[in-house]
Length: 142
Image (cartoon, one colour):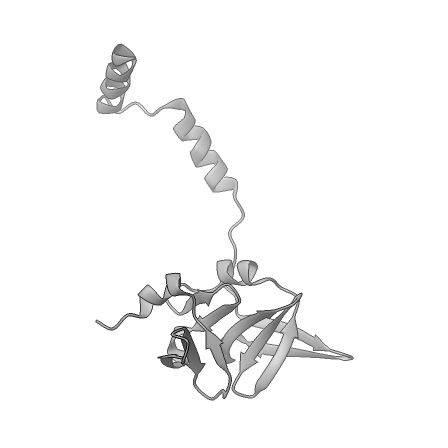
């Protein structure tokens, strides 16, 4: 084992790349890139509504659907939060609970309720949303 590790160190110092490195590079290059999300297409009955991502304040998972919350109301889509999160800019969005992705600029306040649980309020919306304890660390005051 010691001699094998020594050979590996020598090859790495000589500038040789391990054979798996080329394979991993090829896999990474072949992986499809996801485009950033720009529009949400939401249907309600016979109407399809196009919502610009810049208008969206939050995505709230509820049952088998995802609520798209905007200042002008809400719409419902079937796209899971996990898929949405992959296509959103992580500098603008954060998943603060397993059921909620929020635009960071849309957060009005974070407040503890009477049971000591954190609640999040979004600008322009009356509804309060839960924040998980694990993700609350991101919002601790500096």
